[in-house]
Length: 134
Image 1 (cartoon, rainbow, N blue to C red):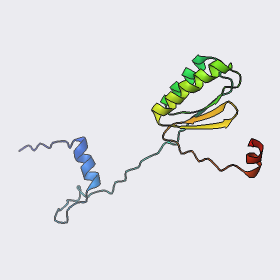
Image 2: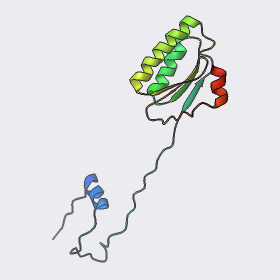
Image 3: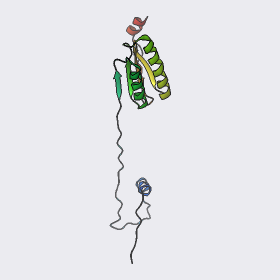
């Protein structure tokens, strides 16, 4: 007499990993359950792009594409003309709003845009910094 066994599918095997055997189940010497471990590896990949000289709108589009990919962007707009600087700022504000990201001004015409998944902590201004800004 020939016996056929059905191979368990993916979900059956996964359910077997997550459940304990019942106490009333008996095992032969060959069917002894083996302890199994499930290992999850986390990836700590985070990318920051520093754009030192944004001088064209194509540079801003490249930064916007980086935000869409989840990469933090630091933009230096000091080399751009005042009209282009304003246009790029407005464009990047819209991109950042859509991505639900964080926008911080780091210096004069220097901005940091971080995606929504990034935690950005802004330290309070020191007394020296406050005195300079007055």
